[in-house]
Image (cartoon, rainbow, N blue to C red; front, side, top):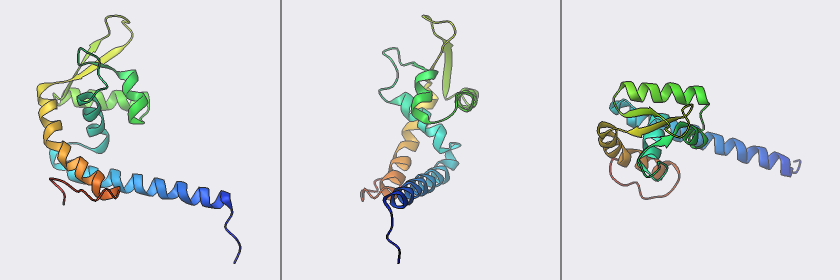
Length: 137
């Protein structure tokens, strides 16, 4: 049996990471589907509900793009869909009229709060935390 090279081990590890990511994303999609959300939708809501926004509760779309791992155009479409559903609101940046800022609406905060335990339970279960918390299936 040939010895496994460091390069082959590295490639195997990379594929394991991709598999865990894909399975976790699919499971998040499954549990959030009844809420009309997918994993990427929730990730944007979660970032907007966390420390990412500025003191005014708004976040530049450009800052979100760096965190959600979507192309700028895919993120713009996602935000437009969330806005249409009444979960976020967009506004033009006062300091740079080319920039767009986004914030959660009251409805977006409420939906995020209901979906949060489900998403966190999936993360705990899929990532081996062992503390599956409320909403675990």
